[in-house]
Image 1 (cartoon, one colour):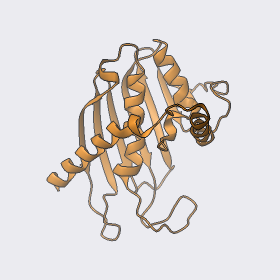
Image 2: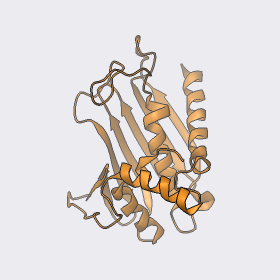
Image 3: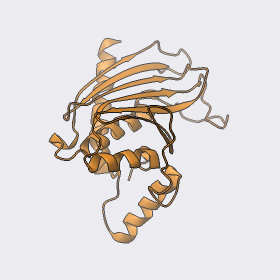
Image 4: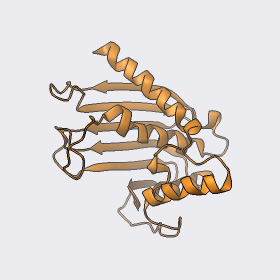
Length: 208
């Protein structure tokens, strides 16, 4: 099982249920992933022994989420397969050796598109913000919280047994072991996401 927590956040689960129920179809997923990280420090201000990466870490969560949500649509062709992907990156940081800014575009076999902006240069609110633009409404998700397009808070407390996506992810891991079944976010399920990331890395390398 892979740690793709977005599948477990109550906000994204709530929308997943709307999609599987035929009440909502994504037209565009607009995502901003912003941090201020110009050294190898984690969110707690502690030094890391490894270098974080916009594509292989942060974009991975959104690429997987987009495919998972599009695949939830009743009768979704190809199970929400991503059929087109493009990427651009900004300058390479001289010390970290990575791009500090990146833009990614995706298209699903359902026709939905995803626009993802990522930055380690953003000196402002940190984190990832998801705007779901659909055929029957607009929703904004930030981790476990959800509002509609007019800033009305949506109650997601009854979506699952916890309001903590990381806890729900951990619960799924142990439940799958106990029940002898494939977990949500298994390696097999998320492998297509990493194939897309590989193609995007090749694109970026060729355009450098």
